[in-house]
Picture (cartoon, one colour):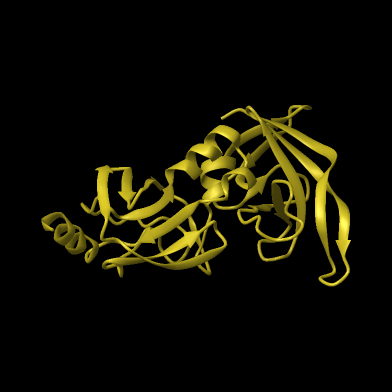
Amino acid sequence: MIRTILIILILGVLISCSSNNGQVNSNTTTNPLEGCWISEDYFNSIKEFKSPLKAQNGSLFFVISDTTHNEVMMSYNFHEGAPETLNNLQIISPTKIKLADKNFVRINPLHREYDYYRILEEILFKGRYTTTEGKRIEFKNNGQVEGLEEFHFYEPLIDYFDEGCQVDQIRFMKESREFGEYYGFKFKADTLELYKLHCLEFDSVSKMCGVVEFGQLIYRLHKTE
């Protein structure tokens, strides 16, 4: 009971995980629960298999902000959300907590508008790469990509519970707010392969491709750091 009361008091003075302009809040706080939390099994799956499609089922994500008291909005499978109470929260370490029967780890993704957090940009893609010809490419955790011909922005697909999502995908854009073009991707150890998408079944109702597969390989990028 004392532990529950302590956690509720702590949550009442939390600092938001990020600021409104998309940059991480630099304010300091002694609150051990401040931040963004993702289910540990999802995080570990991304690190091991590097496939958001494989990791999605059962994934959980929530943010503790300055307005949090004893309830958060939990994202289930990055597809839907619902309120979740924090009554059963346990602090395991500064970067790990347990809520009910699930372990969560702290991550530090940048926050874009509409409550979109750049999770995969932070924990999977960010880094410097080289092409087979030696050209340098950089994926930044703010959604920018440098050196990839005409594209300047990228956005990995995190929700695969819709049609046309049979392979891992990433969207590239010339401008940050345009629709852009989707490509398939695979990580093989430290090598990122980008593919054209091949449509197997076209949905005449939605006017979208219902089933896709990997098409032509267009880039093979080796991650250097």
